Image 1 (cartoon, each protein chain N blue to C red):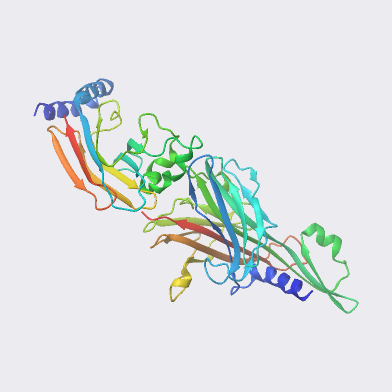
Image 2 (image 1 turned 30 degrees about the vertical axis):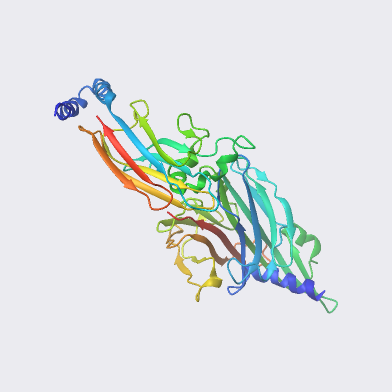
Length: 181
Length: 267
C-alpha cells in the first residue's frame, strides 16, 4: 500500500523533477530482488553432458533484455572453445547472445551439475529494469540431447512476495521465480 | 573437345535459361560464435536442392568479402565429380558474403568456314575477336551465386551492392531469418531498385517431398519483396532479368541472374 502511494507520487512528480524522481525510484527499488531456482534434471541417457543454460529477462520490446546467467564450457583447449556452441541456445543467441563479448562479467559461468540451483539478483543487476511487464526466460540445450525454453511472465516491481513455478518436460526440471519487494 | 564444349555450353546456359539447373552454395551453417569459427561450403549445380548429383561448380570466380569489406581467401578448395568444396575461416565478428560471380561477353562467329567461340571480359574481347568477324553473335551476362554467414551479430558492410548486376539488399538481414517470421528484401540492378522481378524461393530437402513447393513473389516499385518462411531450413532464392545496358554495342542484350542460399532458423 505504501508502495502504491509512493509510485503514484513518483509518477506525478516525474515530469516536474525528473532527476530527483529517478533517484527516489532507485532508492525505492533497493530492496527488490529476484530469486530463481533452476533444476537441471537427471536424465537416463547413454551419453550425458551438462546442458548449456541461458537465463534472461525479456521485456515487451525485443531490445529490453537483462542477461542474468549463461552456463557454458568456459574453459577448453582454446580460450573460447566452448563459445562455439552458444548459438545452439538459439532464442537467447538471437535476442542477445550474438551481440555480447565473452566471457560476460557476472553472467558467464561454467555448466552446472544435475540438481536445483538457486540464484539471487539484487538491485545492482536489475538496475535496467523499469517498472513493467516482463518474462523470465530459461533456455537449455544439451550436446547430443534436446533443447527446451521455459517462460515465466511477471510484473516488476511487485508490492508483495510472489512466487511462480513452471516445470520443463525434457531438458529442464522445475524453474521457480520469486519476486521480493 | 566435345566434353569441353558441352561444359562450356552448360556454363553459359546456366544463368541464361529459365529452365536451367540450379546453381548453389551450401554453407555447413550460417550462425557462428568464437574466433576459431570456420564454415565449410559445398558448391554444385543440380536440379535437386541441396543434393550434389549433377556437376561441381567452378570456384574460379569465388570471391569472399569479410565483415570489414576486405577480401578473404578460401582454404582447401577442391572439386570432385559432383561438387566443389572449400573452407572459410571466420575470425572477424560480423557477416561474410561468399559469392561466385560469373559473367562477361560470349561471342561466336565464322572464320574460314569454322565456328569460333569466345568467352571473357570486354578488354579480352577487343583483343581476341577479329573486328571483321563474320556472322558475329555477341551476348553479355552477369550472374551471381551467393550465401551469407555470420560470426556473432549480423552486420551489413559485406553486403553493399556491386556496381553491376543484380544485388540483394537486406531489409531483414539474410542471417536473421526465422520460421514463421517475414523476411523483407530489396533487389537492385546496377545499384538501382528493380521492380517487377519475379523471385522464386524453394526450400531444400526436395528429395523428401512430392512437389517443389516453390514460393514465387514479384518485387514492387521499390524493388522490395517479402516472404514468410513457414518452416526452418535452407532456402534457395533465384531471380533473373534482361536489359539493354550492355558494355559493348555489339551485344544487344544483357542477361542478369542472381541466386542465394538463405538459412531460416527455428524459433
